[in-house]
Length: 356
Ligand code: FNR
Image (spheres, rainbow, N blue to C red):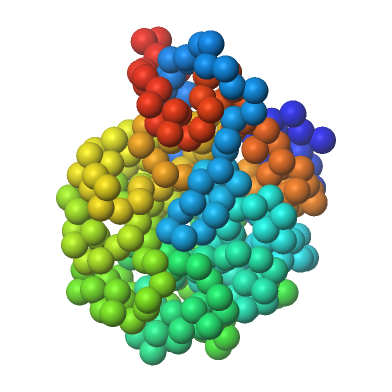
């Protein structure tokens, strides 16, 4: 159905309503950061090694106690029933079969327990105004067997996503935040000048969350703690000092602060700042196995893959998409003469000297 992971966007476009397509594809503001993510990843070069004697590269790794068949996880993404009636359950089953963890969003449209029962999962936490709900989500995630807690810190408020505003986007009646019963009414009601999903975020999320809250969270769970949405190396250091086991260098796929740098540009300084003190993951704009290999070469332990998997979900092709991604990682490693991910990390990286 698709020759590359990136192809699923156009395949899915044929079956999805425009407002859902825009909700998934869109970024905030003028979508400068959204475009920058791709342009910058395209400009990264890797110098391949030769005569490496490799027939079958080893794409596996272990991340914070979880075994991965390749250095990738399914990014936490809200409301997957927008794409398919089985939503999160279908994508989580496919990621278990593919041997990579599925990160359950706070805003999943099936209950986290039901998703976690399908295979190895991590839980993504949004900071809600009600601390008791935050504490209960943390406990539920641990109880359900999630392997790590990933707290997203780049959404004090939702970035202004103009496509959603112009489409007056609201959630359909059969899609809701299943983990937050009684808190989802706004997401279904159109408000002039603001999308319904943004209105829900404003009422539910705590904008003034701070490092003290992160320190509290560290005491509230024994799960490995990963902080998602870091771009400044000073914040990465601060996260380590607060007890984080990992950080995700991410601009939320260009959906939050428009004008932020491409994640791939922010990666090197963060890796330098934290050294071996925590794992460094990356997301935003990963569209191929080659992109995964580029991120690892620039210092990432693994990446989160976002939109391409939602497009694949819409056309019931998630198994195929994840198999394709693994094949692309393998082929890129083979062509670059890398027997394993340590060899990828040792490749020489550069930047194309022509504008992309
Ligand atoms: C997201 N993202 C996201 N992040 C998060 O921490 N919690 C969430 O609930 C969501 N929801 C969400 C919905 C949709 C439709 C998208 C596209 C993204 C951000 C996501 O985890 C990740 O950071 C980006 O998607 C990565 O960029 P790419 O790979 O989509 O370009």
